[in-house]
Image 1 (cartoon, rainbow, N blue to C red):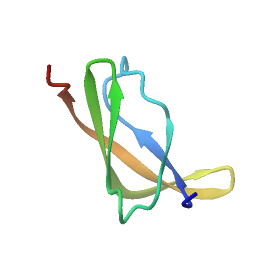
Image 2 (tube, helix red, strand yellow; image 1 turned 135 degrees about the vertical axis):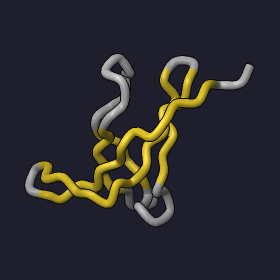
Image 3 (cartoon, rainbow, N blue to C red; image 1 turned 180 degrees about the horizontal axis):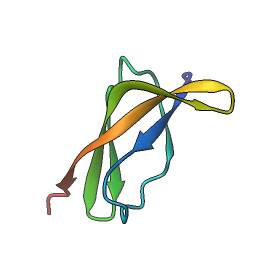
Length: 71
């Protein structure tokens, strides 16, 4: 199983049911993530910032936009 790193998801409308933490293989291979929430995808991009979490520096991905699932 490949190594994964935890990232922090930040931003977006308050009513979006997005987890605060997510996992990616690496920032380089996944500078953007897309998470399915209901009938839409919430898009997050690496902000270049880090946040302290349990004594570690966690990359912060900020919400950038929403796209809808095609029917």
